[in-house]
Length: 248
View (cartoon, rainbow, N blue to C red):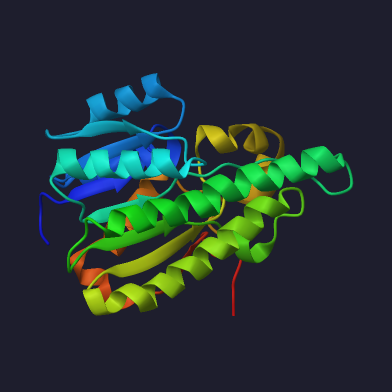
């Protein structure tokens, strides 16, 4: 694989996903930008991409049939798939001490259906279009390891995503397909804006650098993990949190 690869980014209409889509396009790759409900934002991202040959695709990741149709449409437009970035995810606050039983169940269903099962289904569908040298990068979270006490479903789903990535690295290595996971902490996006507005000093203070990363910094790491040079990283989980927390 070199320049001009075919790349599908789920959750590409905003934040980290949009930055990832732009980073690949800047390299000369053709990008399928997936969105769930924000068509206008998705269209704006596609229109902002460098180069040509990009496409906007839609799917509710909770619906397996929608996922398959979306991935197939992306592969058809792009002429195959060289890279899948599983970036789409949801985050719901549902502390066990203050949610009703119905709210608790709904949060777990919605989170796992998108973050884990949606990722697994998108990956299965993408692999049908992939050849040797393809790459799969999962965008996980520091919360998979550091815990998410107010959003346990998100933490659990991201931990499972890392495990899924390692299992698939074993399964797909013989086909020359490498699978990795990146685990960021807080990132400077609109999704984190509300939390940063109230807890920004404490969160920035977790890192010795005294800040949180931009979405573009995360995107640069994803582009590397998806590169031909990163094959031997297959199965790895890259902590990307500015030394704010360590796994041993």
